[in-house]
Image 1 (cartoon, rainbow, N blue to C red):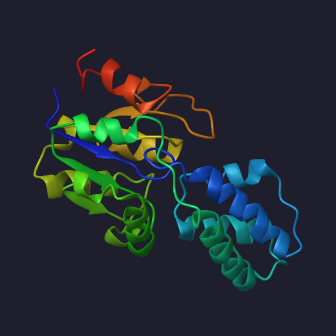
Image 2: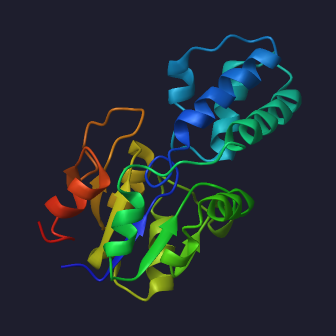
Length: 210
């Protein structure tokens, strides 16, 4: 049914979004700004450049350079205790015999840090980061590049995503999309299947035998 499987990283395989949200609240507080969780929820699935533009537009009087330093330090503090995997992530990776790739909006440095901490790199043949593309998600380029690196037709790929931004990117690439929402709910408009967790999604879409 599929020739390859492509995964998003943050919020899909790794339970990083809640840590990043907490880090964001800390960073804004250090800059004297109280921010609503809903604002931070709007940054989920966005790459750093896009997110920076949103923050600067919303808080034009804030010292963004100081905020960026505070954010980086806060993320490091919250990641220091380890980065947990999403339920079923390691089990699913071990069960899939098809070629696999990662397509993430994290930078290459961020990606390598997360792979080092979690130890999941051996499960994948290729990795696509923000630094590897000209147009990040929701553009389809990250997923198209992952398919090209794997040597497969994008329409024969299954993609796992959590965010609307990522699901849109995979959908525009012509892939079958399983969306497992993390913090933000989903309309499901870019997904062929919305699932409560990775394992049930893999079974329902036919990747694993039930």
